[in-house]
Length: 150
Image 1 (cartoon, rainbow, N blue to C red):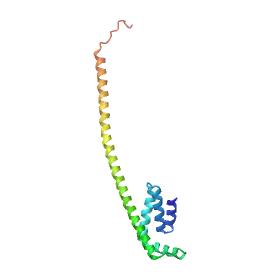
Image 2: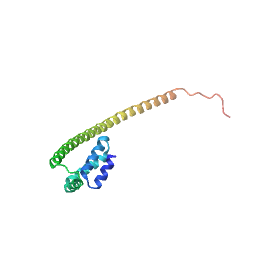
Image 3: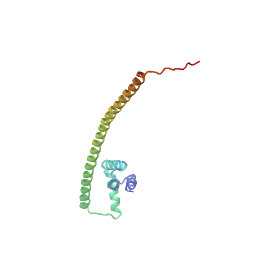
Image 4: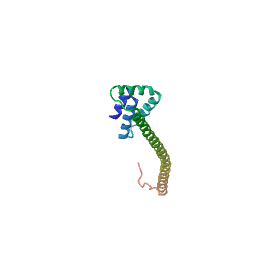
């Protein structure tokens, strides 16, 4: 729901509210990569086009949503601080996930070596058993046929 609202706001170039929607979407589903991507994209667009966001804020102020400039600055600072903290947490989570994936890949490669050794040992044992059966069969004297075949 929040993801869709963010997409709509982003398409209308209202990056500030879109960022908030994406953050809410990520709070509800932290594994949503699409929302994470759109959040970063929106933040990038906001940094590159601050005039667009300022124009949107001016429109909001004209529509009766006036606030004191000091409150805006304080709330913007708080938002930026919270955003920075969340970004740091996201980066740490990504790094932890990458480390876990690397560990899993290493474990899989180790496991595959161990599995290969076990399979090789099993195949060698089967070969030994087969060789022993063949030798036993060859060691037994063959029965002579007493009857003549005419």
